[in-house]
Image (cartoon, rainbow, N blue to C red; front, side):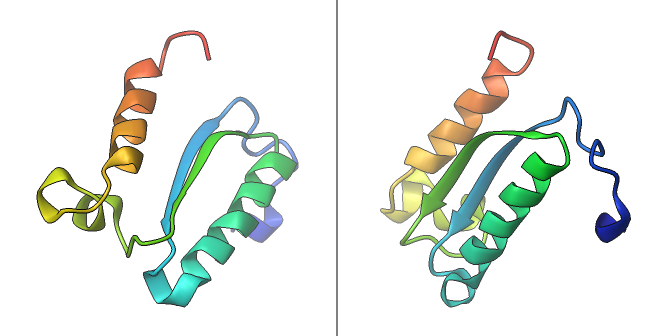
Length: 88
């Protein structure tokens, strides 16, 4: 359970976070902000936190080149994945 996790539970782990501002009327982004603080307080590193105010639930379903919405966040995620294993 996360509440019982030690302060080093995420030591050495890196995270890329995303939330859509329209998901649950913004609640998902507020929850993601809490998760970011939790990750950091337990030794992890949040390399990027991408908030897309017009996005909904799911980066693949609400942010993609074919639906007319910005794909900046999706491109950022793919760039991040490509960078894994390289110097951060």
